[in-house]
Length: 510
Image: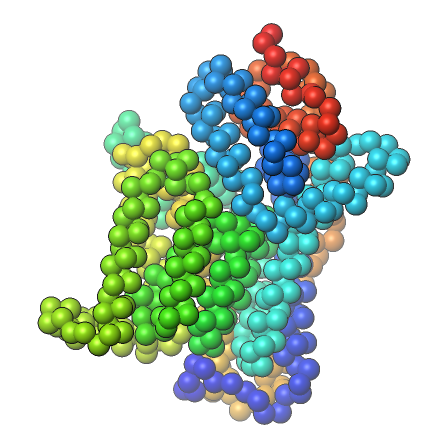
């Protein structure tokens, strides 16, 4: 078998890798178009995206509006839950810098045209969000394409194209009912019935497997939210790692927080954990300094740990990080400790040797998936004994997000290994082999293309947002939580955009 890092610079032309990379991006956008059309809705999340974009550029004006809303929610039933939910969203308003900027820029352009014909705020919101997330996806795809091209490895490019086509086909599978409400089902699967004191581990395992196989719009690399953009750029990070470009991979991973602050931080933490276990020797001074800077920034800018009452876990994480940093410093200084040296010689070194035999792809996937499985029992325990709000919003979703984050790398990585394994055993010339792999990728992408040619999502979202207009400027009636949030997000954005004071009348006592 040829080594995993085999490169093939023989008969292929200089245009071959860029061509395959472009084909890979076409496959990505076929999956993206299909997912966008199926999932784009005029719900509270979509309106929240727009509100965040407007608020990012009007921070001083938005603070009094949030205070009014908090006063109103404090007077409602289940006020503690409602306040925590609103505060959690309000504090995260600036955590999607790329998307917020793209949506806001799109809205300023769109308003010039829509206002000149007929003021239709629902259309402004839906168009702005649609264009903003498309711009974000294009940026992520451009980074992904650049990483493929910079490898100058036609075999790797073929494996990536085929892997993306396989993921796109998996996303065509009919979704079970559990994936239509992933947050609720993840909590139900991992927490079980507290009253009965039992957990259906079969259901939990089935749910985790389904999410990993085909996560739907919420957890797919083809989704339109910033989370999915992190998944795509995260795959590019893994491609850099599999070329052993460690510093470049960490630099690119650091940029993920510009797309999605919490997911970027989670992804960065996973990379550190994998490398501490598999290859601590890569942590030179530059990488350590970058890690310290990124994690410090994540803790200072992020509010999720405080909002979800998870500060003890932050302290525990800081202690572990400090211990790892101390060990790294000690080893750099060539200091010896008999107990640690004995442990490393008998247990750690043989373990790492076996992982290194798997190569960068195999070791990353093995350790990454293993860590995901390890946190499942932690999530089960915390769901049963911890704060209920944190259980639903954080612990259950942590398992799902971690698996979804690794899913593209898992399928693409295995495909790259399979392509290299087959190439080492066939007698075809290189160009014929590459043509066969690319042809298979195109064949798999054809059904995805047919499912992406009937766009209806934008019109549906605009119609749904239009149904909120009658509530604006009038006392709020009783609404379900998500319906109330959608109206309030709409009102905040509308007041910031137009200067009309509509929120006061809506929150007045009836």
